[in-house]
Amino acid sequence: MSSRDARRGGVAAWFDERLGISDVVAFLRHKTVPLGGHTVWYYFGGVSLFLFGIQVATGLLLLFYYKPGVDSSYESVQYIVTRVPFGWLMRSLHAWSANLMVFAVFVHMFSVYFLKAYRPPRELTWMTGVGLLVLTLTFGFSGYLLPWNQLAFFATKVGTDITAVVPLLGPTVARLLRGGDEVGAATLTRFFGIHVAVLPAAFTGVVFLHLVLVQRQGMSDVASAHATPRRGMAFYPGFILRDVILWLGVLAILLTLCTFSPWDLGLKADPFASAPAGIRPEWYFTFVSQSLKYLPAHILGVDGEVVGICTFAAGAAFLFLVPFLDRGAAAGTRSPLFTLIGIAIVLFMLTMLTLAYVKPY
Amino acid sequence: MAFGSRESVGLSRRSLLDLLLSGSFVAFLGAIVYPVARYLMPPKVPETAVSSVIAARITDVAPNSGKTFRFGSKPGILVRLPSGEWRAFSAVCTHLQCTVQYRSDLERMWCPCHNGQFDLTGKNVTGPPPAPLEAFDVIVRGEELVVSRRA
Image (cartoon, rainbow over all chains, first blue to last red; front, side):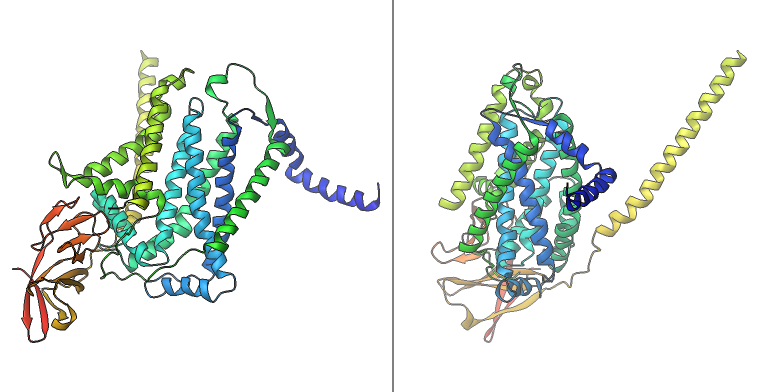
């Protein structure tokens, strides 16, 4: 052993003694990921986490130039994308990666749903996951307003009014979100604080819990096959290296999108102008906005939108509580009803998404 | 008996302490949560009650077209009918508060957010809006159009 190797070994040993890194590596080598036809779905949680990391990094960079305020938000984003070196890249990365993250989170959620991986003992893993989905969508909703452009202004007006429609607490929550009666300067300040401080803190906490639970219980195997022993892949280095290769692929897709289709800024918000024709929210909210278009003014004497919003709220509650509702999966048997409900939800969302882009009115 | 009574005294002392302790804990939490909740709720700002504004000049709006204007803190819409007659309404859609626009092809007010339509009296005629638009009065004063809230 040369003296250099000894020195490196010495430094590594010094850190290992204090941090216990070799114990962690030994643990990760021991941890296995089930192999089989469904292994591909295990990657989407990791992809979501990777994209969240990109969000944190690019978000921090945008904070160096972004100035919240009705007279400065739009102008500062314009400055970032036109004057700041690589500003267009940072902003596009943030916007595109946000969209890919929402997509990855949805794929992750539905794959876990269809594999019934929420069955005991992983109920809390599922529920923290639904919490992360809600936080991801709230990130999207709050961040959308920050450039203070026309589409964002109306999306926020409609979005906060949707909360106002919810009976009892709705109007109070809407006022709390807006920081007043109307969407304006106070709303922008609140959404900025929520987007850059409240949500990142909450997300980090819930993600930590989610990962601790995944770690503690191991990855779920497919319900139908759980009686037979299955092959597994070591988490380290086998699975983690495949993860990294996929992340690099996602990064390549992301950079391609940013380069060839940089995110648009649009027109500055004007609170006294009409909403433009063809207005729609981000694609992941179109299943709500498009279905609201088809509801009549009144359903059984109740305002149509109240019925619609309460139905979506019930859907969210169903999703959150599905580990306790799906008794079949909990008992280790098949539960085709819940598979059908899942398929119906996916088909509904895809139909509304398509209609929003192909035949909005 | 003496043992039993001592135990019952001990139990009630314990439950009294539990009650006091949990009561103070709830009070402590309340003392934190209440100011924070009140702080987050924005104070009511007295709105300057606008009763009338100069919405536009006659030459700004051609027949069979419309124009939004600022009415207090909310948008209003001024419509010149094909006949030349003036109408004005609140431009806030009664569905989910988007701002409506005038569609000359339909001769109606239209909300692009969820495809709601209002006729030229402000009545919700098709789509999801549950109520009509609030109608305002329009007075032509020289070159100017004065829009005022109905009494």
